[in-house]
Image 1: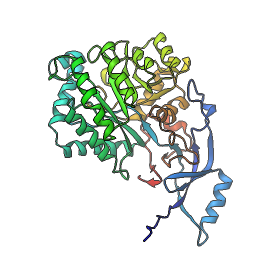
Image 2 (image 1 turned 120 degrees about the vertical axis):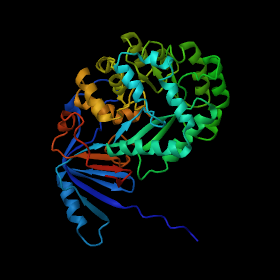
Image 3 (image 1 turned 120 degrees about the horizontal axis):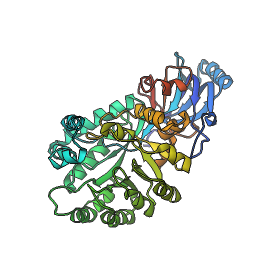
Image 4 (image 1 turned 90 degrees about the vertical axis):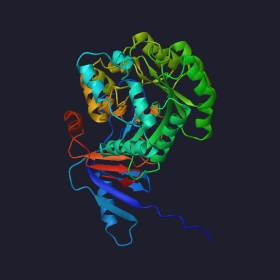
Amino acid sequence: MVAEVPVKEKKLIGPFKQIITMSDLPSTGPISDDQLVIVQDGGIVIMGDHIEKILDKEEFEKEVDRAKFQGSDLIYHPVTEEAVALPGLIDCHTHICYAGSRASDYARRLSGETYLNIAKSGGGMLDTVRKTRAATRKELFDALFMRGLTHLQRGVTTCEVKSGYGLTIEDEIKMLEMINEANKSRALLPDLIPTCLAAHTCPPEYDSPQEYLLDIQKNLLPLVKQRKLANRVDIFVEESAFDKETARSYVKCAKELGFDITVHADQFSISGSEIAAEFKAISADHLEVSDEKHLQLLKDNQVIAVVLPGASLGLGIGFAPARKMLDLGLSVAISSDWNPGSAPMGDLLTQAILLGVYEKLTIAETLAGITLRAADALKLDDRGIIAPNMLADFIAYKCDNYQEIIYNQGSLRPFLVYRRGKQIL
């Protein structure tokens, strides 16, 4: 017996006062707002989980009339509010798989203690490691699920998620398995893109960072590759984590195993950007203290700069020099860095807007950083743009002009969220 192929629904969504397609924009360097392709009073046709076509006002009205005929293959979903549509947001750097809270660390920082001093006294990242190791698989899954659901309700339809709070072979596998398990709940969560960040810091069970990295490159990375738990490997290159020389052999091994590389770079001191450039990483993330020389090095090696305003807000430090990066010709993606320690807010749009205020980013540059350029940072060529043949991931806000979304500084929330062609909100 031949199995029946499910019929794909064909939907007509609209009208939208504006559809901000994010198409035909440069992949690197500055973007002016007048480069945005905006469809006025049009609609979107979805076939299954992909976009079939974008309609202008005249085409949309014709399709609405056609949808009213009995036997039409179109199912019309009218948008009854004035609305502006954007591609679904993409958060390309998060740590939302973890257990516990670090509210006490936050209070200590507000009282004047430094991030590094808190870590040395038993707080910081290793506090989250202890809680994540102790969490059951269900507890870890449930916490990840709720954070992912919150992201989706805020308009994030794709979200990268790192391991890195296990720091043993067993616990890193547990984290990656829970990320992959949660990714099966596609009707309720964003697409989750797993990244192995076992090289987050050296756990106390090892005598040296070199010993730890050697263990995970021999005993963890091949297992992750074999079980298809992640295609991406990250490492925190920093004085308090892994220095440049120690990181080099680990990154070389990961690349030889076929992983895509991303690097936590230049957050407190410069060196990680050199590793990212040397190995032509997909992205270098953080870059708060990067100078022009090292930014040029990233540009020359086509490394995407991922800036993390949430970490700057959480730690009370300066933003990464996003304006300078763009003017140098880099591709700049913007991500939340949602994590329990330095970036607990997790609100991608609000953070991107605040970064834009201080770094003087155009609205187009801000939106590109959380849509199409964030997609590039994850090597995803099927999203980040509203266009034919792209995934039907898009969101809509109650307003008549896209500028209102940024002007309201994150207080305007999407009232429609379409995820792979299904209406979630």
